[in-house]
Figure (tube, protein in one colour):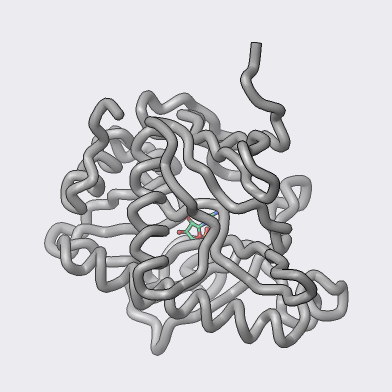
Length: 243
Ligand code: C5P
């Protein structure tokens, strides 16, 4: 029998009721999906790696004062997080052209961008998370102009932090996605980084060889995803142990 009430199940994670009000337990599955779940597989050990890696990045963000949902890791596959009201946007930051921007603008993958570019997709599986301009976000009330200013500031701080951490272990941060949640302290609303930060939602290229160490390995059938994520964890010194 399940120990806890399931609140939500996504493609790669499950959220359960937490031990205290305002908390949730985030469980990392081994499932991998791409192209809006048209391609699916179970990747042995992925959940364990992403649980560790997300802990590592969120803890680092906490240390530099970037607010996020992480409280503590509970076990190999679960972490305790703050409950948030998720903003229905995927916030994408790009440093080099790759993936959809390269395709849309006919750019060669790996082309440096003039500055980090922040863009938004509307989180909606039926629609395949379409790219949306700020105008839509504000008009439809998904976030206010003030929220978007705060979200850009958060996203750029996360980008600076992650770029440095990865560069220190010989990895280029090409782009990544974060999600943002709302929390309330009384009447005062704050925006914090939520969801996960892992190679599932980043593009990571080895600085020397250009080898891909992220979910593109799965999307493009380039080899073992577990090997790629294990390499990232190893370089960062967070290879999972049995606790
Ligand atoms: O596909 P695209 O080039 O727009 O992806 C940009 C970045 O956002 C990539 O790192 C990708 O892994 C991430 N992303 C994601 N979830 C999505 C769409 C993109 O994590 N639904």
